Length: 147
Image 1 (cartoon, one colour):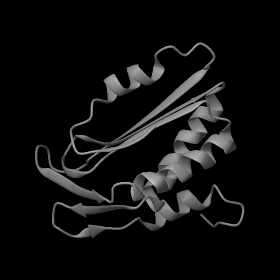
Image 2 (cartoon, one colour):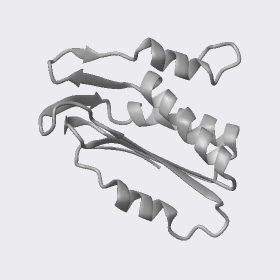
Image 3 (spheres, helix red, strand yellow):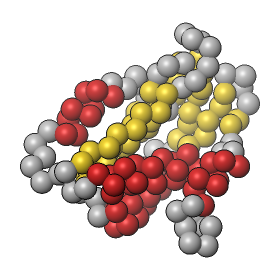
Image 4 (cartoon, helix red, strand yellow):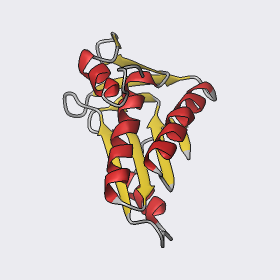
């Protein structure tokens, strides 16, 4: 499931729902991305295009599901104004074994960070682009370095 939302996230409640009623799952991995900055101050503003953004993210999920033999994936990404310390993104993966769940979560975050059609503006009003480190993290998943 992929959701783009414009409200404060509750990572614990989302994870509890994701873990419910799993009798054949051996591992669930979770990632919670938080907004950094000066405490209590506005940190970021994120924008997305409804339908288009979810479609692109779904492509990453389909790739990860095949590559890591996942049982389930849940991604929630926030848009709008996000304050320091609030969750920006939640990624949960479920698999029969821990390594697959962990690597899939990492794979998905690398793709979200560098390739998802989300536009991020810092508190100073400047647009934030993926860094060289973000691109290097993404490239490690591909034999030829192509994303």
